[in-house]
Every structure is written in C-alpha cells, then in structure tokens.
Image (cartoon, rainbow, N blue to C red; front, side, top):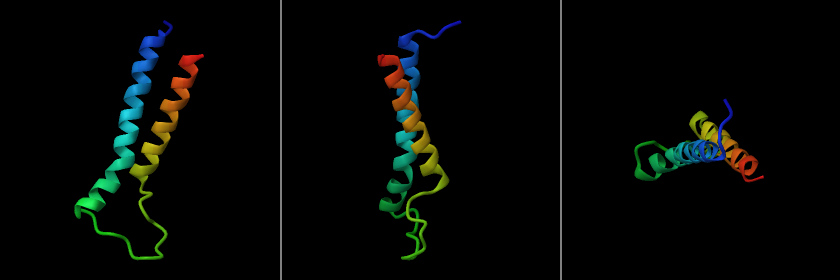
Length: 70
C-alpha cells in the first residue's frame, strides 16, 4: 500500500511539530527556571538527548516534505 502525498504531508507535519517541541523543550525549561544552567565551560549547553531527537525529527520532516513536493 503506497502512501498518498496528503498522508505524507500529515506525517511530515507531525514530525515537524514533535521535533520543534523537543528542540524548544530544554530552552523553555531553562528560561522558566525549572532547569538550572550548566556551569560555564562545561560544554553541555542546551544539547541534551531530547534536543538531538528534536533536531533529527525536524530534519526528517524537512526531507520528507521536500520529497513530497517533487
């Protein structure tokens, strides 16, 4: 069963929303004060595993959207 372009659009939209939520999650937690900042020079910054999952999902959504558009 082949997926229609409309279904692929919805999948890429869901991936994009979930990816953006994962990317923004650590930033929002830090700005609201619920997560303490790492010490300067620790090298961790905001790149937690959640951040990387969001990054990968967002890139996958962009690639899928470009495939659907062609």
